[in-house]
Amino acid sequence: MTEEQATELAALQPKVAQQTQQTKENNAKQYQARKGAADRVAVLEELEGRGS
Image (cartoon, rainbow, N blue to C red; front, top):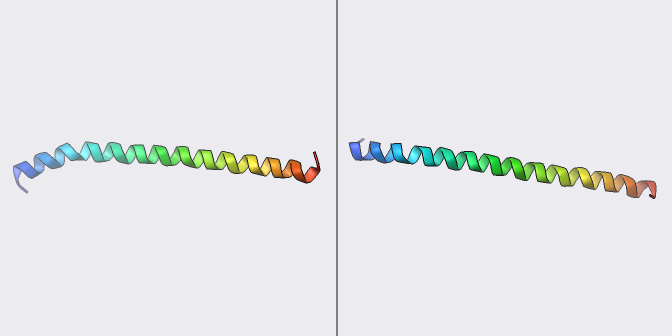
């Protein structure tokens, strides 16, 4: 690996790590939103079944 390549790698690594972290955070937010919606559907279906 040349010195130029090593410098390029050192510059890119934090960017990739940041993008990976952002992706994980976005995935977690989306999961929570889907879980909340599924929980709400379950509650509403239960209410519907009771005839309320």
